[in-house]
Image 1: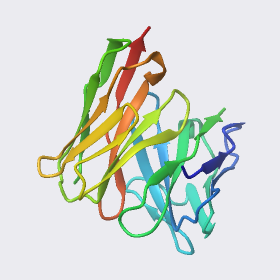
Image 2 (image 1 turned 180 degrees about the vertical axis):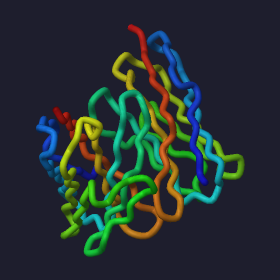
Image 3 (image 1 turned 90 degrees about the vertical axis):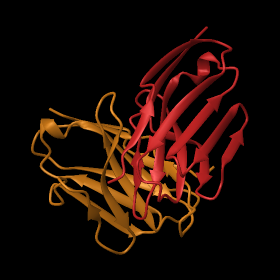
Length: 117
Length: 110
C-alpha cells in the first residue's frame, strides 16, 4: 500500500517555542492532506484540510494562527505549532489521499507525539 | 452533520472466535467508508475501503460490509488472534472530509 511518512515521531519542547511536523507521501502525489489531533483513548479530531498550492481549510475551533499548515508540494505538508503551550501536548497524525476524485483511499502517517513542558 | 458511532466501545474475546464490529453513520450521502486499525501510540493502518457503490470487501480474515441506506457497516474478523488486538476505527467520506467513528478497542486473549 501507499506510504505516508511523518516526522518527528516524538518531540519535547519548552513552552513558548514552535514545533514543525512534516508529513510526506513517499510513493504517490497527494493533492489533499489532512491533519488530525488525537487525545488519549479518543478518536481522531480533524484539525484542517491541506490542499497543495492553496490555503488550508481549518475546522471550527482550530486557531489557524496557532497551527500553521503549509502544503507547498504534492508530497509534503507541514504543521507548525506556534508558541506551544502544555495544552497543545497531544498526538498529531497526518493523512494523505491517494488518487483524485471521490474514490481515493486514505493513508496515515505514524503520528507525532508532542509534549510541551 | 455527519455522526459516526461504533459499537461496542470495547470488546474482549478468546482467541479463535469470529467477531463483528459495528459502525453506524447518520448521513447516507457518503462516497466511501474505510476501516482502520490503530495500535497504541501509532498511526492508522488501512484495512479495507468500500466505495459507496459496493456492498462488501474482503481481505484475508477480514470482511467489511456496507449498507448505505441504513447507515451501517460491519467489520467481520474470522478466527481472531492475539495479534488482532488493537483499536479499530471506521471513517466515512463525505463531500469534503472524512469523519471518524469513536473506535472499538479489541483485545483477543490467548
